[in-house]
Image (cartoon, rainbow, N blue to C red; front, side, top):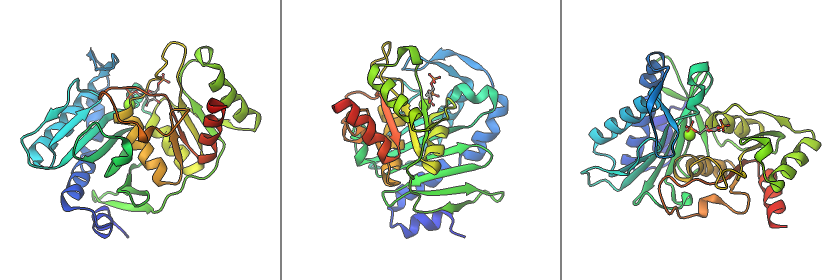
Length: 296
Ligand code: AHM
Ligand code: MG
């Protein structure tokens, strides 16, 4: 049985980076326990203008406090915090996170997760510069899907509190699942054509409302998750720094692709921390198809 710590050691990852990954991953048990007492909405909105749940705030505060205490991280930026926070640490690492992605599904007990990206140096770097990216998924099992730039591995948290490997060298197959955010009546013609082509080819619609869970399905079965540019929201909904880049990094490491419909989002240098972007992510063939439609 390969456990997370051993995998990181064998990957030759710098000791402090290993410690940050393990420290955050180890919070999954406390996070799971907090769901039961945090089932409601809070009276606050985040920097993207979305109403927060008490669980969004709980996880954000919890992980931020743990990282501040650790001395392992210099800067942190979170989807749930307006500003970047700098700690008095000599560490070279910056952490970006969506503490709880899919939070509208908490009250219906569907699958949500925590998304994390780690950079060496500044936070506003293109996603391709990530040193590590991972997500914890609070589903039937608690799983950790991780890349330190050497492919993608999936671990599951066992009853001893140890992450044991389920799968290494995960590759996104070409598949026909698709899920798209945004109201169909607000989709733009190129996106509508993309979805119509998939449906005409027998594609199967799967969309839960939790990006991290929907991506995990695409990672295993193949297909595409999209949150496009719409008439009302030209920049889509998801955030480049907190959601798209870490998961995009994992997609590329698994042999898939990520795009804003026109080009690879991992090449974009973010102008601001809460910037949104349209996203298409999944099997390489799917991403080539949408880029072909846009660039025709
Ligand atoms: P969140 O981070 O506040 O949960 O927002 C992002 C979520 C994604 O997980 C999900 O794919 C999308 O928003 C769902 O949006 P919609 O309800 O518009 O389909
Ligand atoms: Mg999110």
